[in-house]
Length: 95
Image 1 (cartoon, rainbow, N blue to C red):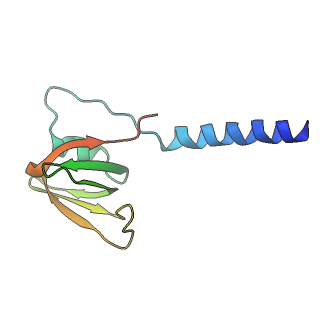
Image 2 (tube, rainbow, N blue to C red; image 1 turned 90 degrees about the vertical axis):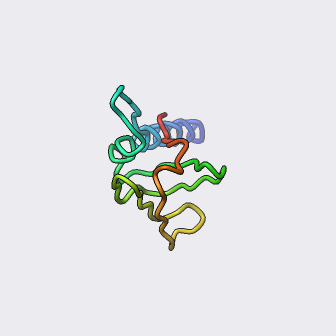
Image 3 (cartoon, helix red, strand yellow; image 1 turned 180 degrees about the vertical axis):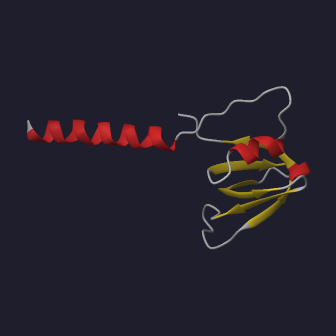
């Protein structure tokens, strides 16, 4: 009985944590890759490039031409600067 309660409690905690890290994604007719990235400043995203490569990390800075991503997944001590014209998609955790 105690084990079942513990499992239930752990499940509730994990669901709550995942909701905290989920981000909403809404776009309008006037949005661009830059505006979507700016809206997710300080949050973790995955960026899919023209080359097919994917980079995941935290959006640090966005300009008209470049995006700075820090704490790259799998390379936490590295940052990347990406040319915005090379970005095909921005993926965020929504649920």
